[in-house]
Image 1 (cartoon, each protein chain N blue to C red):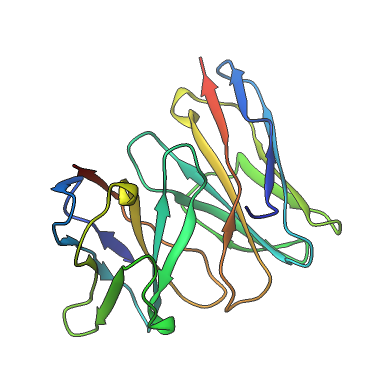
Image 2 (spheres, chains in turn purple, yellow):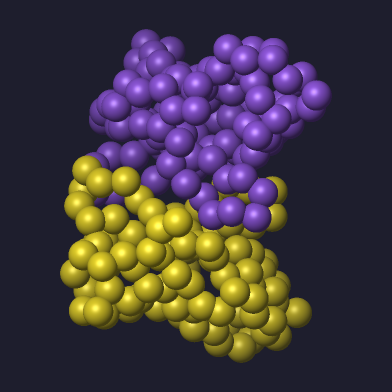
Length: 108
Length: 112
């Protein structure tokens, strides 16, 4: 069965601290991996996708096919990073499979 | 801000009633997906339409049905509403298989 596990429901850090949001997946085939983010009172939006290999808002994510993980990292958290983060694998043309999400809270 | 819109923003229904939720995709986006997001959970896939045909469905009963129209709008219909249908309903559109999905703001449905 296709499944996404985000083990932390809530991650609280101080401004300037490193952040790692964990994501493990179980998915047949070779999915593409995404991180979506939802800021307060805003719609769900794409943060980054693994094939782009980009750094968006200082966030990066490395796909580890051996461990089937796609952890999201940022070296120095900012208060504006506070949001709900969802990991989602996807096979081209099909729907996203979302994890339960991790709430990131960054305080000063 | 993306071009995906949804209506209404909020809706209250009673158990057993029927509801229709609407989504307007970005122009040129032939694929629309609908998701249900219960409180404290991630979005769960309901179904997907491509050029007015359903081409994918999640683990939802047949009382959840949909339509997609040539003008890039779509509907989610739910019959015989149950209390557990209370959730945020999201639609997302994309232009091609490799394209990013763009989400609407959602419709919050409360079933009493």
